Length: 243
DNA sequence: AACGTTGACAACCGCAGTAAA
DNA sequence: GTTTACTGCGGTTGTCAACGT
Image (tube, rainbow, N blue to C red; front, side, top):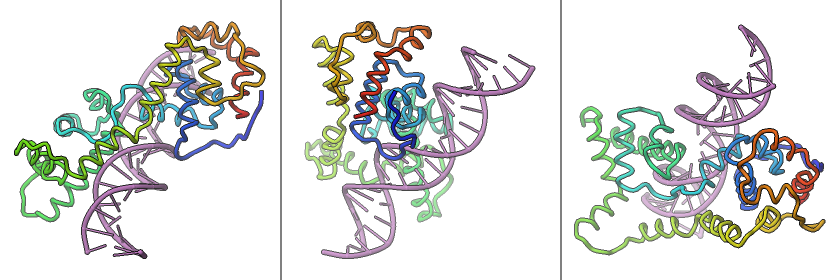
C-alpha cells in the first residue's frame, strides 16, 4: 500500500477530488465515510467527504437561487420549526440544510438591517418577513416581470440563469458517469478513466471489479472487509494515491 | 480605476445521538 | 455497561465575485 502524505487536506475541493469521491461513493454507497476517505486516497476526513457529497455532489441537488416558492416555504417552516435546518431541507427536495441555512442567514441579516432602518415599524411576524423579503431587489425584478407579463430578462436574471445552467459542472459529471455505465463500463474504467488514475499495470477484470460493476453497494460487511484487504483493491487504491 | 461592502456559497468545527464491538 | 467509531446537525468562518461609491 502506497502511503502518501499523511497531511489532511482542507479547503475547496478540486474537480479531480470530486470525481474520485463520486467514483468511490458509487462503489461503496453513502456510508463508511472514513473508509471512503482512506481508500480513495483523497487525504480528506470522512466528515469532509460526507459533507462534500451531501452538499454538492449528490445527484438531484438543485443549485442556484431559491425560487420565490422555496423562499416562502422556508420562511413558513422556519417560523414553525425554528433552526431545524435538516428538517426544513426535507421539505424542499434538492436543497440541502446547508443551503437553506446560508439562505436564512443572508436573509435575516438583510431583514435585520432593514429593520434597523425602519425602527419605527412594529413587531416581527411572518408577514413582515415576507413583505420585507419580497422587497429585495431580486424579487422586485421578478414581480415586475410577472406583473407586466413581459418576457424581458434583466441582466442580473440572465446572469443568474447562466450561473445555474453553466457554472455547476456536476450535471456533466453525472452524465459522463451515466454514459460510462450504460456503455457497459467497468469499475476499472470508472476509476481509471473518470478518476484519471494510473492504468499501469494494465486494468484487469478481477473478481472484485466484476462483482461490483453491477451492484457495488450491495455487499455485506464480511465481503466488504475481504475486499478492502484484497490485492486487487490495494492495487486500485494505490493507483489513486500515486496519481 | 481603486477600494470597500455585501451577498452567496463552500467548508470546517464541535457537539450529540446511535450502533457496533 | 462501557468504549469507540461513525453519522447527523447546527453554528460559524472563509472565500470570492458582484456591486456601489
